Length: 437
Image 1 (cartoon, rainbow, N blue to C red):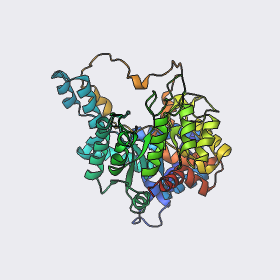
Image 2 (cartoon, rainbow, N blue to C red):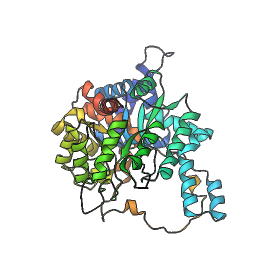
Image 3 (cartoon, helix red, strand yellow):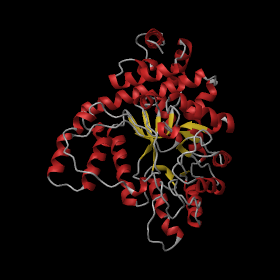
Image 4 (cartoon, rainbow, N blue to C red):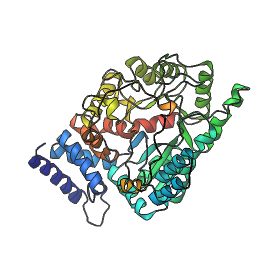
């Protein structure tokens, strides 16, 4: 997009914000999406607009539709705060262990929005610009240990308790609709692992924590995360052995309790078998279409069909490395198109798997001394990959560009009803169908 065309598009966006409300005293949801954007959010918008090149009519319609809709990110992260660099520096200089340093860094990024006025302002600004109603929030560190899984769950419980006038914890699907009606935001929590007792005496005893974590607010769980566990093979395993007998029991227990089985990080055979044995919808909350690019984090057509047959959905993520090609917003829409046209518009969503990060993050991080090189976590070991992600690609699929995902769907000819399904309705449907009987 040349400068003249871009200026026309951004002028149209400003005009929408000015004219969408009939009175200056009335709330103007489109204005939240387009006005007073900080430089980080504005730059990401400009990059995405230069790729999409929407007409003024498509831009206007897409923004208005986005502002009016329940937008439910099928897997992602609420905005991340900057760390307190001085506190982190003090911990490093005191000789804090790698585990302590990692834990404090994570806690700060997830909770300072609730206690620091500057970070809270950033948090509010990102939510408003995104137009997102609810995020299926990563609220459990990847693994099966209940103690490990509790940490993130506690942090997001703290945030929603402390900021309930702005963001709440959704416990049932109706809470998401209530948040939209009242101009708030909410988090639906996913555990990133099935909590296991690790005693291995009886199957019911081993799975007893599934109900406990459900009672704490977890509504979706990863069956595996990259590596093999007792449930099945993760997507990073070369063996692709599938779901274990214990894994079948785990899926059945999740169905019984009301927890959505998520195979986003599971191997293809594990994903296929989980979808086939489940009595309720199974999802791949943040993935891509393997027919476009067969990365290990993608799902090929036979797996997608099994997920669809279970009543679930594939949430297309915003990771350029998995999208491939240019890895930008246009390719994101290509993956959505593929799933929608091959398997039906009722079975595709957007699970961004990316987060907005505070503008203050870099400056605060510079205060912290280096702790040296560390080994890669076993759970995250990946096959060698020479793909180079560009900054423009990342910016184009930034979390705060959610409104432009809707604009892109308008450009591609989807009806309003179908767009509402893709940007939130399908996730809400699965949440309702998964509720405990």
